[in-house]
Length: 270
Image (cartoon, rainbow, N blue to C red):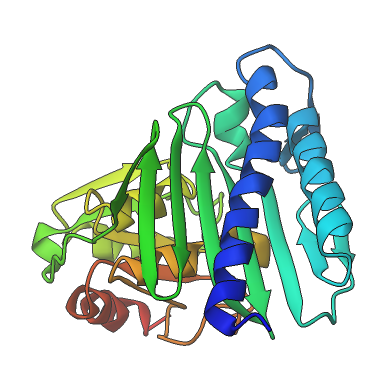
């Protein structure tokens, strides 16, 4: 009988295979002038064939290899949502970056067990970077060379390098959320924008110290937690609650418990 650790290792290897299958769909279409559709009516929420075909490829593999596992994806919804193990897929996180030819988009793949993410994978095919978190550890691989991830350990806001995808109040933040983010940004060393999930990979490498976001959905954040936590970071909602409990999809990731608490002090007022 396969024990829990061996089973988790098996699933982690399979997550890498899923990411490879997604790469086969996203990379040939990147910077290739493909058609972009808007799936959000009056708001611009782009989707491309890369999003759709990458998710289809991942779903086919899961259904073929682990037909009892659930699948929840951004583009095609849920299958077997009540299964003990569920694969959570964001085929192209950062489609806006993708359609602009900016290589900060990523494929996100998570495996949840009884609703808790136990494996998280962040894959950036163009730069050939991959983060994999499971079993309390996170590893980074680039061009075949693998190393352990470790956050910077920065504790003070004044030394922190901060990121969010879009700080404007008409984008992902409400007015109050934008003001809270601005309050944090005013206390940090530097802020960088439009990195999407790539920012969390950089946090796991010690290059970014703090990420503050809102309006994220399950497929946006499930893969992030095992990577951030496996690298020694902290990731929660804006009040310190577990991810998924906040209906606004607010996420706070930090390089250390002290930095996380400093940011929480500002965000708790929202």
